[in-house]
Length: 134
Image 1 (spheres, rainbow, N blue to C red):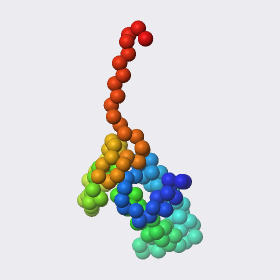
Image 2 (image 1 turned 180 degrees about the vertical axis):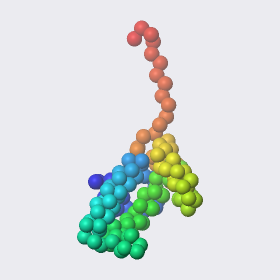
Image 3 (image 1 turned 180 degrees about the horizontal axis):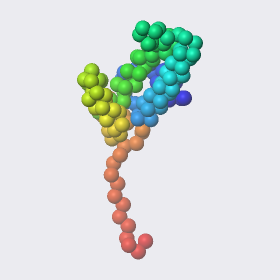
């Protein structure tokens, strides 16, 4: 829950980087809350029949739209990509798969033009040689 609240606190922060953990915890919590509100919408008969949109789930979706875009932008930054890659989502089906591929990729090692690695770990290969008698 801390990852979810952390994203909401940085709701309009489009700079910097977001780890996979931050992005996916927010996505999971966001989905669970949306589904719970959609169930309440159906149960309380708050669904607009012609459109199929629920009152509570609709307002929730509008409320978390900016934080969701912000964390997606920071996640793309973490992989070394520009926020303009979000525009690929307008290509039906293929765009979603490309973004999914970017979202599951590991952070670019070290710092990049968007800031330092949020993991705080610089991945440099280390080689240790040991004598066979040790």
